[in-house]
Image 1 (cartoon, helix red, strand yellow):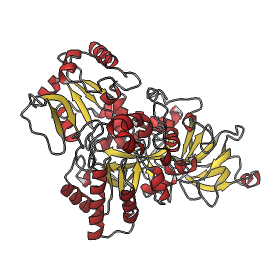
Image 2: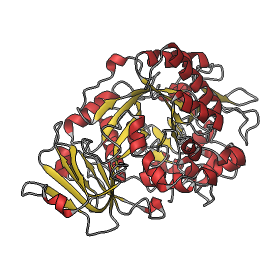
Image 3: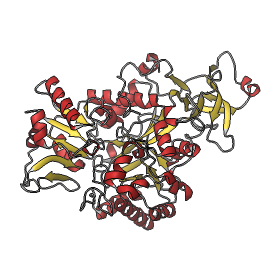
Length: 566
């Protein structure tokens, strides 16, 4: 991505004919599975072919040829699509102190990083931290209390996000700043964790309604900060090989999120198409949702409803106690009645509804709400989705198929938290069947996968590798019978992901009439192993080549940290 491309504002498609040639082009089009060249004009594919004779008719003095065929390993695929990420939140984490497993895998390292951050920050600065998962920090695997945070960061406004963003750990000063104490009642859909003896707040806050009591009492991030966060995220996603993403958290910070995207599209040639998914509860006024930010790179497709929490945080609602927490089955963030009411309202208005449901109890409640909405107001092609859907049972998948509900699995959990789910949170039996891709495939279902960045690394090859191998951090296989083939995995981040977003007519395969979006890979993901070692060399969006062979990242961002010692 050149600095010239970054700096100019364009809503029109590029002029001229662009030709991309490679020894191997995987089209994901059953009628023409492979090709050696693609021709793009005015942002759309106008030809796909297999030999030089066909290519010559498109070659002229004015056409622009990018030829990768000298390297037989380089492979072109359709532009890759992650249907569930968080743009501004991904950028926000780049400005936080990181306490992740890759750098803080012992209590001592966590405490050292916090002490050093407190020393380095100015006294008035808020210390915002992220990626601290006590479940991955032996031996106790118990979270820091507010008293421990106070000791490490005395007198400071300090809070620490769990990597799932479903839990937050706070200093006493933040709690006092929010006006909370032991007598404060839990907000609906959230929970303040309390000392079982004294009733005092421990400093752990579960789910957004509780966490927002802490963060909402602090100064909001500025528009300048949001602008920087979105540029960081867009550049990072493009560098990873994505040409399209579904932002499942627009409006989470405020309605001003949309102005951040407006600034992005007005000031830069954005190397990414964004399908926005406002979150009900954060963005309820539909009049504030803009649909005109860009004619081809911005679309608002669905509303998201958050119905439970995270498995690794023990807040997803499950039918059987968590393996390492007897008596704990998680929680709902919305009542079953309110869920039905919300789904019905959005369904009647013609929206696609995407329900965040990790636990099997929540998945059933989501299906109940969708089924009732369809009975009351039948819609032939609603394509309602269940996001994450990690503990879906065979019976629930059968029901999804009947209801034409689309599961969007959080497949990278098998690597990042697979060992933890097997040994602690869910136990061996439930842990082995999280994200049951093969069950969905065997049923002939339409489904996809996602990274949920920043929760896991937004790398398409890591996602494919996780779907194909289901390898955990420790190198063990988690649920061998749920592994799928590389071709099926590639479908999940191309044509299937496009279908989930009502975009299969313009994205997901290399066909005449579709957007001229391509991903250039260093190896063939259908044959090379391990898939996770394949690099994105560049992307093509609307015919424009963003070349990452010599430029790792655009100059306006700093490179992110490596992904958890992969």
